[in-house]
Length: 60
Image 1 (cartoon, rainbow, N blue to C red):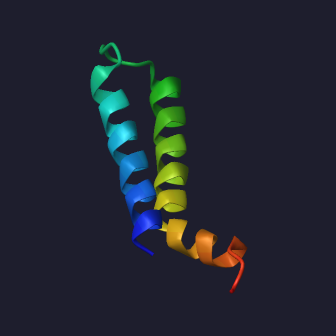
Image 2: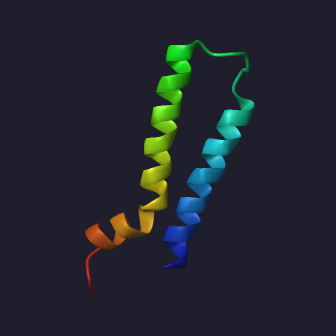
């Protein structure tokens, strides 16, 4: 159980680090809307990571 939480948290740290390290500047309105939608979908998937693992894991 701890391994899946470690993977989830590592993915969140990598995503945050990439957001900080990428070149800055103000994006166009369309780009910001697209990035916001992608971030929302990504956040929902990461928040539901344990549920997805339970769904597809084999029960021993």
